[in-house]
Image 1 (cartoon, rainbow, N blue to C red):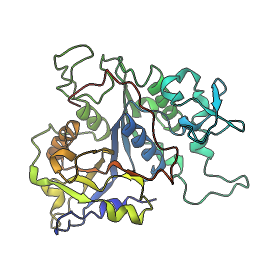
Image 2 (image 1 turned 135 degrees about the horizontal axis):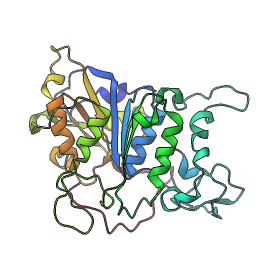
Image 3 (image 1 turned 120 degrees about the vertical axis):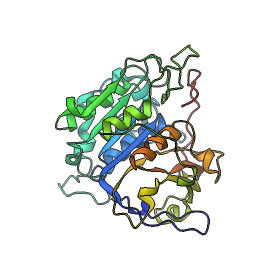
Image 4 (image 1 turned 180 degrees about the horizontal axis):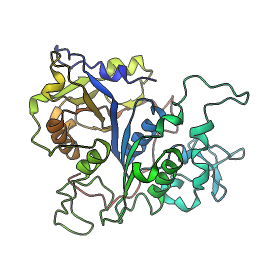
Length: 338
């Protein structure tokens, strides 16, 4: 598996981006909520190429489709929200979002099973087109966050993700930072984000905390340069990667500080991947990059980090993915400014 198709970017305009000299040893994914789930899954699946991850409220790899001994079961129907279940009897499936809403049902000792053994056939042969070997995760840097007033990811849900990493890393105590004692609602907090039931900015720099942990030696943020933010057309990659109808948006955004963009400078730049929704943004760069994205870009400008935002929120082919429509979930405590 390779990140090369994602790095060969072209602008929507006639201008073609120059090749980038990415430091393959410093590639970090970061996201909040569903993007946190994706960032963690991306980290595990591409562990040979992703050195670190920042998860702001996320659940463990393959947890959503794994049956644990304490799980309750529901009838499997054509429109079930969990169409595939590992360990379920015929005509039965799991309660939707059981890892987020019922983390006490999760047997954390089972969490590494798929990561370690899911790529092997019964004969012992390795499956083709599978996730990278989990041994690559041994030295990863992991930043985890969950606010104490998060009403979407229940207490214990992110702790289960911490437990998974503790079973996969060589030095988990020194490699994982888990912030779970701050009274934030469900959010990726920036300095302007207030605590739950407050209007006063709490001054917690979530993006900075993430980058300081996964990219040590970080310099203080400084204003982003608008001309370093570019919109690119993702559609050429959608067709080549069989992503048509999977929800990938037509446009994405990339922030490239000038030292990383100048092909005459042999400087290697780290890469930060921010998978997230960009619904309604179209090809408007400022709309694609907003909120916490801007804070990440400010650190990127000061430290020579390329920020790639491959947007989701595009067309989903219901014929190919009949179970793709997620249920609406109550989220009245979601914070603003993140």
